Length: 406
Image 1: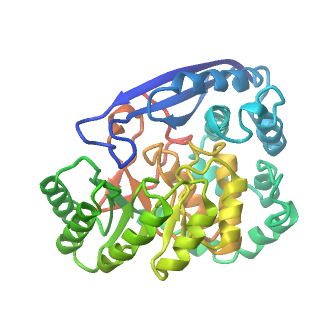
Image 2 (image 1 turned 60 degrees about the vertical axis):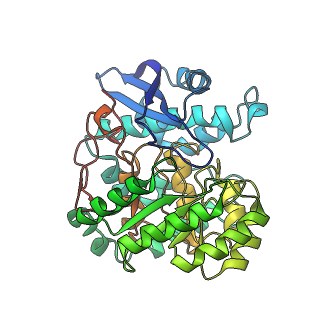
């Protein structure tokens, strides 16, 4: 059983220009890390992601949830985790601080992710293997379907899982070939044109066939020039994504997105305020067939449900260290599968946890193995850093979720 808990405030300053975008000019990549130790000596590690200030507040929220797990066996916890998640996320003294968003929800994400890591370690398998080997009923009992019943009930999710069981064996091939990645680090906002050009050439030489450029400049002509620069160097066959990180108002987005269409972006990401669903719907209709990607700053399954209902998202970028952890990530992936929208996670975890989750998404849920974001900046801090060869994530083999920090 879980006999001790601890929470760590881990902050990692980045190199010059790294991690920068139109809104976040000098981020400090930070984790609120929860450790759950059981009486066999195993330690479950989970975290939520922030950009520095306030990380200590998330740690305090995580401590509140983690303390309630003392004396419980991890198998007992996970056998009915959906109900526990519901109780924690609706804790009456914390709910006014959310609900289901902000510091308290990030704290819950840290603890949730630690539970899944300990569960996989207890069974001696990588998290992806644990998830794909669960029975459909076992999997669904880890999820909270509250507030989704108008679109997805437990019984409907069970039917969806059964319908996608066909082809599961064939989809296991991804474990051998690796999961495709795309390079986010070629085009950070504060990088010079020359540095971006060098990064693109290096990425192409390394086998990368999809990459991202940060846009959202005060001068739109800078964005247009840099987007065309990346396209000219990379060529027409490479997928290029543009990410505004919420910088534009809707009128600004309508104008510049139409101009950016000329370089054929694979998607335009977070063009405006993440809570403004109707603005995204208006923009998506105006720039079709160009597609929008969103979800990095969407905190819970209810808002994702609304985005899917509005039919404005071409790609969903749910992040398991931003929403309430693995449990809510899987719930949102099920919703996306129902609506036929691809899941391409944002990786606040640097891909460590999500390399497991995208394998589950593809093998069990039948999502297309599209690609997963690659951000290399914190690799040296992980015990088992992601392994990427020729643009592919190699399947992790160590027990757990790959989130142990040095």
